[in-house]
Length: 89
Image 1 (cartoon, one colour):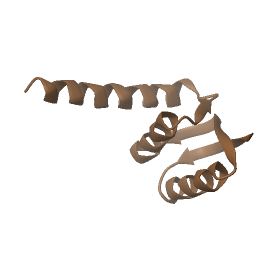
Image 2 (spheres, helix red, strand yellow):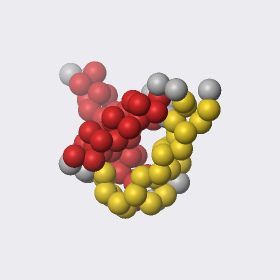
Image 3 (cartoon, helix red, strand yellow):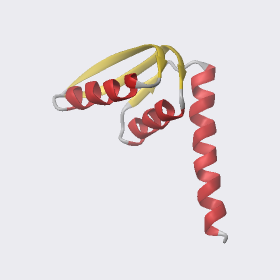
C-alpha cells in the first residue's frame, strides 16, 4: 500500500466538507492517506469535526497551523468535557 498525501488549502467549510469526504473515500480504497494542513487557513465546526473523525480513523494530519491545532484541541476538549459531565449526572 502506498501513502497518498492530500494538501488542503484555504477554508474547509460548506460544500468543501463533502468534497473532501469524497476525495478521502476514493483515495483510501487503494492507499493510506495523509492530510497536509499547512495551507489550511480556517475550518468551521463541521470541518473540524471531519478532521477529528479522519484522525480517529488513522489518517495522519500534518502541518496544521496553531489556529487549526487550537480548533482541533478545543473541539476535543469540549467533547471530552461533555462526556465527563454526562457521566456524573
